[in-house]
Structures are given as C-alpha cells and as structure tokens.
Image 1 (cartoon, chains in turn green, red):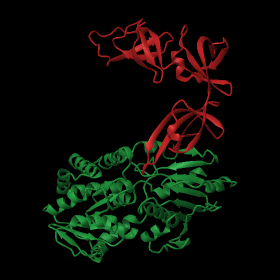
Image 2: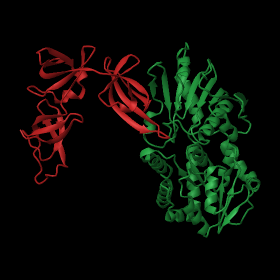
Image 3: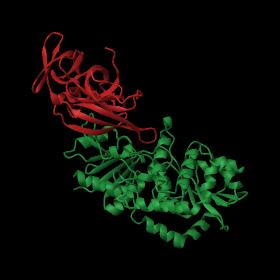
Length: 375
Length: 188
C-alpha cells in the first residue's frame, strides 16, 4: 500500500490557501508517517510563511514534505494513494486522465471550505462521479462536529501553547518591540479592508482601558497607518490616547500562533487565522470572507450560534451583535463595552470552547481514517 | 449537459451509465463564492437510492425522457393500468408510482403524464393540482373557520390527508400533488 499523498493547492488570495495546505501536509507527514507532496502554484507565497521554502525552486523537501511547483502540466505522482484538491481547486483534465488510467485509481478528495452551517454534516463524506472519467470524488468538509471532517490541529499544539505562556511570552513580545505597560491589554488585528478600522481605533483610543493593537505586516498595516495619521514603522509603536499601535514584521506561521496565544483579543478573518485563534483560546472576533448574497453572514451566524451556545446569554448576545456588526462594516460600541466589562467570563467561555473542540478528532486524522475506511 | 446548480427535482441525469431521477436538489454556498449541490436520487431502472454532492458548476448529462398523456383505467393487481390517447394500455407497478398511488382512485379523470425511459414506463405524473372528494371526516368543531386547525380526512381510495377543520364529509378539495397536501376547498 502506497503511503504517498498528493495535496494540490491553488493560491487564490493572501496566505490562507498556502497556510492551510502547508499545515495539513506537515501534519500528515509528521504525525501519520505519510510521504506527502504539496503541489502549489505559487511557492513564493509559501516561502513567506515558511522561510525554509525557497521561492525559486520547483521542487524541494522541507519538514518532511516535498514541495513542488504546480504548473499546468503537473500530474499526481503515479503511486499516489490519495489526491487532495484543497479548497475545491480544480485538477486539470490531464491530471484527472492520469488518475483514471491507473489500474487502481487513487482516493480523490475535494477538501472543502470550513463552515458551521447545519447542511455541512449532511454533505460531508458524500461522493460525486466525474462525468468524463467516471472517477469518484469524495467531498470532505471541515467542521465543528463529529459528523464533519473536524479542524486542523497538530497533536502537540496545546503543550506548545502552555509552554509559551509559561516561559516565552515576555521575551516574544519584547522581541516584537513592544515595551510592557501596566494594565495594558493586547489585541492582534487581521481583517479585510472593509472592516470598520476608523471606528474601532477611535473607540479603543478613547476608552479608559489601555490597549495595544498589533498589526502583522501586510496591506492592512498601511490602512491602519492612515487612520493613525502616519505610516506605521515596524517595531515602533504609535500612540493614540490610550491606544498604542504597533506594526509587526511579517510573521511565520509559528510566530503568528505565538502572537495569538499572547494577545487578550484576536481579530481574525477567513479560515486559517480563524481556526488558529480558536486553538489560542482567547476572545476573538471573526470576519468571514465576503460572499455574494450575504452568504458570509449566514456562515457567521451559524458559527456564532455554535460557539456561544453554552455562554451566558448577555455575553453571547453581545458577541453576536459585535461580530455581525464588524462583518457589516460597523463598530458596535454598546456590545464592545459589554464584552470588555466581562473579559474574564469571555476568556473562560473561549477556553471551554477550545477544550470542547480539542476533544474531537482533528482533520488530518479524520482524512487518514477516511482513507482507511475507503480501502 | 447541465451544471449541477441548474438541475431540479424530477429531472433525470446519467451517472456512470445509469439513469437517475433527482428527488431533491439542495444548493449551498461553501466558500469564496463557490457552492455545492447535494442531490437525493433514485435509479429509475433498479429503484436503488443514493445521495451525491457536486460542485455547483460541475457538468452532468441530463436525459430528456419521453412523455405521453394518459388517463387511469383500472387496477389489475399488482399493476395499475393507464390508457393513452390512442387507446394503448400502459401498465405500471405500484412501487414505480411512488406517492402518486395515494391519489389514484376509480373514476378519476385527471390527464396524467406517463414517463418513459428507453420505451419502458418508469413513472406517472399527476397534474400539479387535482380535485378529490373527502368521503369521511369528523364533524368540524363549531366556530373555527381559520383554516389553521387541521384534522384527518379520508379519500375514496382510503388514503388520509390533513385538511382544515371546516371541511366536511362529501366536500371536494384541491390537493397539491408536489407536496401531497391540501391546497383549497374546491368548487365543483
């Protein structure tokens, strides 16, 4: 039985596609002993997340994963037992034909987007039949329940987080260029450009609670600089009344995790940072990818309903209002004040959610189990 | 060919050389403006069922079936016999009629459509709206004319249907055959 798994990744925007595929590939190799090849159409994007990856090389092995540039003529390896199309990316006809021509075709999986909506459970694990090749393809949906594909989570992640909080948090923050300030809370900011940045930063600046807003390098940092009235310089905090704003250098995946662990509040977006913020177990605000016909609002509502199900009603309603407003480009001051005044309860609730999710099988393990069942 | 998102219940597609009638098609947005369509289907040759899922823009082969107008003639156990406009008899088994059998009764005059695949009748479709008589129902509770309170009413073939409380025995009602539910009181 071949232990080769091929993961195909098309970079659509920013670093989420590469980030998720890289985490998955590394975990399949490290924890399940698989020979993983990550085919990615833009290795240069991955090289920013993982500096060991050299952008100009078409093939290299990093962390036990073979990273190959995916071009129009790339085919899955002839011995690949499993071929994954990540984020529903489409394999070209030649790749499908190559799989169909094999005596025993591989398990072909379409790894879909994460959603908390109810319909996901009913669609996870179903098959389609490719019209031309007649190959069967499984639809694998990540999710938050046992009836879905689960979430990406490395086995040692929680221990790393605990160790970091116990020993490494202060030096990490010092290394980012943020001198400690008594009573100050830390906020990491990663959002789409249509987020209500002006209202948020004004609200934080005018509040009695001191905050430091940490903005990883990227287009958003320039937008935040405009609000601050000056370009943000990496490592040099900018003060706005009770708010300090600090532009961070581009962070590797490992350092972004540390940032999430270190902050009191994480504002995240899309899929990869969204999941990592949940493993951080700190209060968070999620901005889903904007979709036509407000489909993203349904996704946000579905997640918030699950996420806050066991929360005290006041806290749950405040987060639901605050997050939905953020998603619609508005800053809900009332909800924010409620949440801020109950920071302890909020943190406890998010930790309980983290523990509950950590009790479920992780996505990589469920993929391996799916393959075993298929055999 | 049609994309998965264009397909609707009642249409027939070919998968792996087999004809499948779509019983239910559910469209869902997955992420970044992509979508999937989950379909519940029945194999019209074997009667076997399955659920599948496609990307919304996946292409599938649709099969256009032959249709012929028919009217119901009689029941010759285990076959229901219909007649077309040229007086040809068309026989179909109860299982192939599905829920349609609930509304078949002697003397019905509805013009139905027999559906054929490779010259074999695979189903019969009723008009969307049919009229049937309630042969028995409990008397209405006085005063309720809202239509919100429902009770059971029996059709001539014994099938029971939920009807509003104000419907009496011998009344005629309209039924929506897509849902099998009461639609309105009929004026006959």
